[in-house]
Image 1: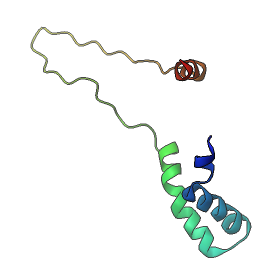
Image 2 (image 1 turned 45 degrees about the vertical axis):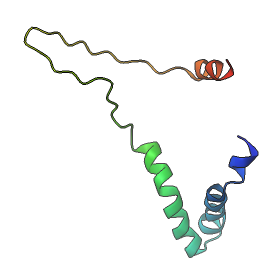
Image 3 (image 1 turned 90 degrees about the vertical axis):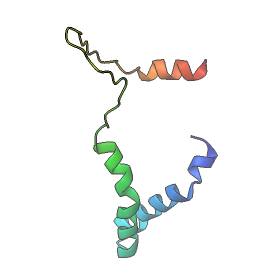
Length: 83
């Protein structure tokens, strides 16, 4: 993570909300923390959205083959990022 992301106002507000609200007991920071963390947690635990790859009309006699594309491993993603 670069310095820019560590100094992000949103990240700093989330961090302060945890320290002052959750651990410090300040109700206003607790409420703000819930509002700031909710979208991030919803994305993480909400599941993945569907992704359309192809839309095509099938005619009688046509065949449909469905395949899943496996995700790259972390090592493969890092190797691609470096190249």
